[in-house]
Length: 433
Image (cartoon, rainbow, N blue to C red; front, side, top):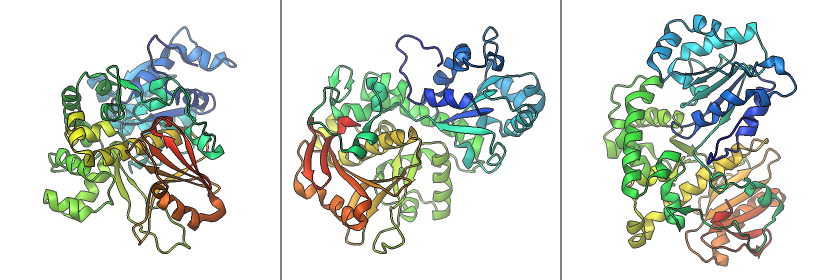
């Protein structure tokens, strides 16, 4: 494993990255800017000797693993103008922000084809490189990809990510000591915790106003540089406003025409710009769950952010405002749960499918998790501290549709006890995430 430093939050994906480096020539850590990718990969710069204990020939630890970032203008210029020559000087390296020079990916392909030793290149990218057409096929079969999202709740608390395993086994003791909401500035409160988000820098800010200032600067950086790195668009000044409107539509069925109407943009442009934001890991469309035999389901996706803190900052939500107007809290809490589920599923060896359920009778389930074996877990989100039998209406409808494939239905709520409601239905504290 790579070396660690005091007070460094352990990222759950670290072990998976280390394993990949043992048998794969190139490993990419993909995720949004400022989520902790550089901090993670720099651990390997000094610790590669222990990452490959069985084959010291893979790397001489006395030399260290060179670290280059394409945020450095000189390195970026070299990567764009002579990528092959640049890589000829490198036997093994960490290369940060590779999406800034797509030419480098083709040169990496050439270098790896000439020398397929595992663990040669550890890359990071702040855009979904596999979604970029110019480089989508360049490293197929030569690179393994791991997604790093902002800090998860289990990472913040320093405990294992076991929600999915517990849900599958229906292993919910009445209470657990760790089922407490992580403290923000010394105060344990679900609202404060969600609004603080998972970006390390944003979470370190002392007040909602300071977190909002960080969010504005973050978006400005994305617009001025990252958007242009992956797409040449004429009206990039529309991006901040599009993000604000998307934040207001969070958790709702996606309607490009409605969003475009608010921005005086046509539907095609909304789709294009939203696709850019998806490539930058800011928003995602959550597909509607369904099987071919179920014709009564709505097929429209929902829109979610990948960080509730960023969504809340764009909405200018504060704890005091949410105390007065709890109606605005629901969409942010649902987005918070969505982001946590994404992080949980990204750590699983099996490719679980995440969707939402809504039929033509307007019966809904916020999240449907489907395993490769078509096993179903339903998750409903409730902001209240109490749960009643009627809160399981959507989950019971989903159970009726899926029959023996249905494992369990969970209502996540703002309490501290797990309670059985029979037939595989559970009320589970939000803090269990």
